[in-house]
Length: 313
Picture (cartoon, rainbow, N blue to C red):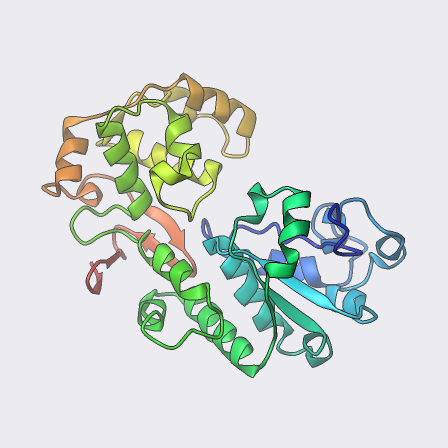
């Protein structure tokens, strides 16, 4: 909107890479506003600098709001969470051909969150758009159903299939699969990268959380990264020492106090952490695993591992 490119911008705020998939919340978000719905649950609550059209029709479902629009552009960048949002939305819109007929998909090859309005406006002539055809819809639906399935098997098979209808989907799925526990260490790509960076002397959390070119993984945001680090540092047999102990009791939603505790931390590897990094110990043999990967609930008793092949232990 600041770039003058759209009358209304409707953001999708959902994180789909961490925790159980928020399917009920997604349904409420795009539906007509309920009289009993809490603030912050409906799409219209997040439209910044609300134009008159949103003020007058913000109670409608997302589809109903889009009905009179001439063009509906979908801007989702290469970030894995964005690609998951895109395939969910396309799967949802399959039953609304009247919206798909006016939909265009912008092929955003940069990170939207880091670009300013002027740069986006200048880049627009060079950002191609494509129509949303049956190929895009079929690919999106197939990928979303695979990611939401109770096991990651279909997703692991999917990366070997033709996904060219959505050009940024395969790299996103590969990044997501790399976050499953590895066959040798029991840790995902970001957790292993944490150990590597700490071993190299990066003792502060700022480098681990914010230097993305150094970390070289792009699935999780800062708060999700903090939760992963806490799992490495505060379990029965920690791989990392020096993480502020108050994080054990600070509520996960208390972002301010968690941020302060992260900044106080000075990290190092334990002897066990060095052994895990060397591949001679398995983190999951000594520590509880309880997290979600799409629709898959990963626990010590149901642990899917990803490497040259997908296995279950």
